[in-house]
Length: 449
Image (cartoon, rainbow, N blue to C red; front, side):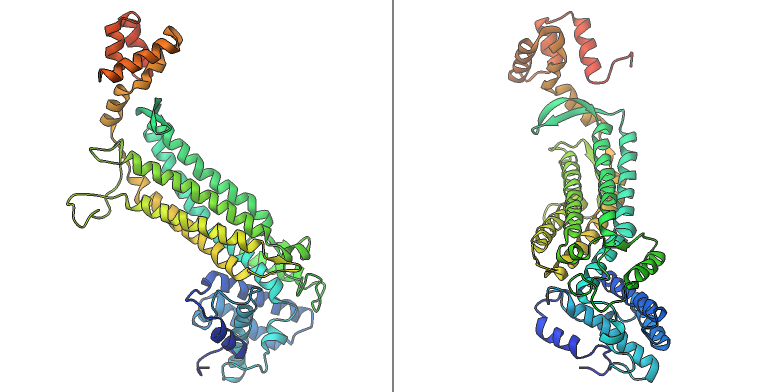
């Protein structure tokens, strides 16, 4: 063990035995555990279970963890014991080691502050790690993902209003359908972003329940009856989130349904972003030989061999992020099934993937809003041109001439490579003035509107 390390033997063994990858927990997760340790020390001191001087040094060390000053000391791999005990002890030993340095000038060790007896007092990995998952996830959703989705919603809403007068052809089954406005199309995307925020709000109630106080199996062995409620009250006060003690500690530790539910919401948001990004790609395709109804910002050369080619970089980034989040959800779903009797044994995997999904979606949503949606411009001429050529305009005649005659009209227009307007006039399906009125109204040229 290097002299400069704060962590002790248990962390060293975990690092030596479980390092199978280069994956480490994000700082926000370690800060959530430190948040628990800090307030646990305060509460234990208040309950006269822990010497006030020792408590204060633990609080100071835990604050340094929260401030990121000891990030390099968290060396345990994500893939470890399924309860997350290795990570819990990594934090216990780092805090104890730093607290001992405060007391003695020498870092590390177990005296006067012991990692188990003092830093971990009233706790177990089995209730600390599930609690930290909920805390970290809720705070990152509040501080990162929700603001990013709000920005995306705002930019999409702006485009919906800006494009509200631009008529275009709608598409179903990838085929020409009936007219709509580009603004209506973007309003659908804006609503998807808004619903994503609402879905996140809906899982807050379950994520706000903390397993703290259940210790090993949920029965609270070796913890003071008031410990959990007091610690959670402090956590709520510091974070501004109304956390509360789990209604049933056996459920809170044996199952991780709230994490699975939250991941399902994240997957839904990923699918929403995927749909929006794909539509933007197609609508901007071309620019001359594709749909080309909109143009997106040019961020970089799109080809190492084709001069002038510009690729939809941001939408393609979003597609990849979405795929990763969907994959993370599959792993979390598998992890949720590992609630064997009184403890789930895939907590580290679930923690890492859940937080990664939150961060990925927040970054993708913000980039999509700022670097793509904000700079989208409509190609009015292309929208008008494709609308006029649309064979589905025959639908506008159905109330006057019936479905079969309208279908025949569309078929003839296709075979002769003419517009519906041209064939309708040629065949005299209705007086020409009425034909023009029907079609002008369909494409948004009705003077009475």
